[in-house]
Image (cartoon, rainbow, N blue to C red; front, side, top):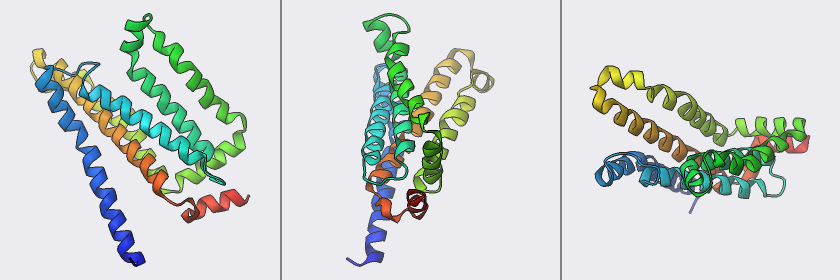
Length: 212
């Protein structure tokens, strides 16, 4: 297989994987409403959210362990942040098993670990800079915008109350917000898979950082 054919095959494979992951949000929302009539904390959407977050964290950690990976500190920070988010999604599990708000204590070690990455501040900033100059950095920017901006604005109750009757606005608002969050988590999982499959030696920016 020549280089051009290989690139095309990999591009098609990435696209099909992206289709499968992006389609998860509407399909799992449909299953939740079909089986539960809502989006419960133990439903298909919530389970997929936690699964995507944990898989992404594990993949980023695996990439960070590569020898001479210039983005390793950035990936460790992201993995620990995603682990915190996964624990937050499991808040009801911790509430029922332990006490209300117990998820905060479960997430604390991951949060402290993420902060500890910045103990070597200059190296971490350099690592983040190397990441932002790659495809994975762009994907993470889109993920952050989708999760922190679009999902919050799109999930505002006032928007859905203006569009729908009051008795259904709350349910639709919850479904849309959870669906957009799952879409965002599918993006970060795609990013993690891409980072795991890409050869770091092809990252010119990363090579420059590694030599400094």
